[in-house]
Image (cartoon, rainbow, N blue to C red; front, side):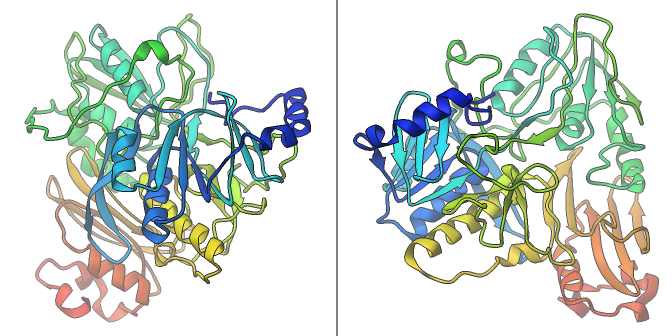
Amino acid sequence: MSPLLASTPHHDTLRRTANTAMDESRTEEYTYIVIGGGIAGVTCAEHLYILHPEAQTLVLTASALIKAVTNVLSLTKTLDSFEVEEHHPDILQSKCPSVRVLQDAVDHLDAKNQLVFTSSGRCFSYQQLCLCTGATPKLLSEGPHVLWLRDTESVLQFQSRIKDARRIMIVGNGGIATEMVYEVTDVEVVWAMKDKHMSAHFIDPGAAAFFHPEVVKEKVECPAPSKRRKYTIDHSKVSRNSVVGGALGPDWLAGLELKGKTERHIIMEHEVEVRKILEPEQVRELQATVTHLSSEEGNSFSLGEDGGLLIDEKMETTEKNVYAAGDVCSHGWPAAPHWFQMRLWTQARQMGSYAAKCLWSAQVGEETYLDFCFELFSHATKFFGQKVILLGLFNGQGLDGKYEILLRYTQGVEYIKCVMVEGRMQGAVLIGETDMEETFENLILNQMDLSVYGEDLLNPDVDIEDYFD
């Protein structure tokens, strides 16, 4: 666990507070400081440079590598597809000359005096600060045969360990678990999930049935040449419990070979949880939990119901000039009818970009308004090699079961689901190359009454794009 995420000892906090005046004499000054080198933090820094290139920005990261969003393709007004690559910090610094990246762990934040202290003994002052520290895995227990997946380094550890494995257990039902089950070969997999169907965070039982044949069949390898530059870090300098990188991006499996020592076989165990481990080997649950700084003496952060740092519609925490973006925060404003927070790389990028605008506007005295991306939940990803688009209340979130479903389903080709309330579309799931995301986004946002179309809304012989685009 990073020093930023751990509770600072009480005596150390008092010592730092008492010595603030002494530290100020050797304080390095920056207009903006961003803590975190993941998707939210790097996006925030890049957009600060675009908005305020003459200002000095510092990015503090515990990792030797940072995450960068590349190959962005706009699909709709609120939805982008993109890739995430690991870069050396000097690439960001060359692209954004007023941005400096420093590999150092944060030891203490003194929000009252606007100072950041690092584990190497350095002190930095800021005018605006953005916390983008992300989340850490929620632990069940520890053991020599247990791995958790969060960043690239943990994935590489898993890759090296699976080579000698005949049977593994994957605990969790989110996106990483789903992709891992699909990618591993030559090994028996027990997939333990607490839900009634796989990937329940993203899809309904019908979509799970659509994907089921892809889970059990042997994966056909069709490797494509990689044109990306790969970076490595010195493993000898990284301890097992260190935070070594930002969260995995949408294409984290690219170029990895995950093979065991036997035939591939998938066993799915539904509605189960790890309660007790009888062997020395133990299990870690692949579920994220928010980490925060609330326990540090002298700071008074308010928390959301899910434990994240509570932020207002300007992304500011309850500490003045301290902002937050990405997995570490919880939104504190009344959400739009078709938006909700879900800790995904899509929202990390959106929040990082909007947080930069908020920091800049506070610094220069400009007014800013809540970004349009918060009008509609939207997420693009891939499961089992298929394109997946999630829009609005795609699983009927917050509707208390009072909705109807329109469904178009062709096994192995496409799965289209519309969530309808009184003839108006509230959400949608699009699996496959449907090319309907922009149309459905418009229908959710404008809340047009579609009752007259009935089930013909999804009739493949009716080109609804001509009506609603």
